Length: 97
Image 1 (cartoon, rainbow, N blue to C red):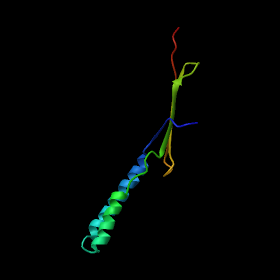
Image 2: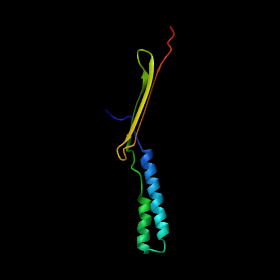
Image 3: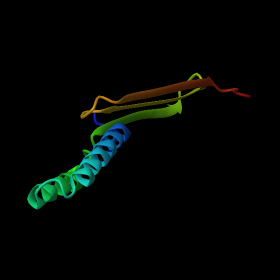
Image 4: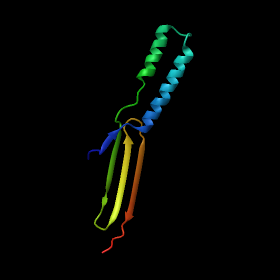
């Protein structure tokens, strides 16, 4: 079965953002204390710190079955960090004849 969509994972984005901030702070704290070459390497590591793209698979279903029940289900999981989320809701419709 193929996925409905692939997108960037919110957990991977948050982790990369935190890592980038840590690396940036380490570089700032090292300014003037390390060689210029090492400082440039540290800045390069900050710039290269990115989150994986399109690592989260999304699957969903939406519809009304023959008994008049409306349903929606959503599931997401990330191949990189293991993030998972699911949602399911069903409601019997009032059918007037």
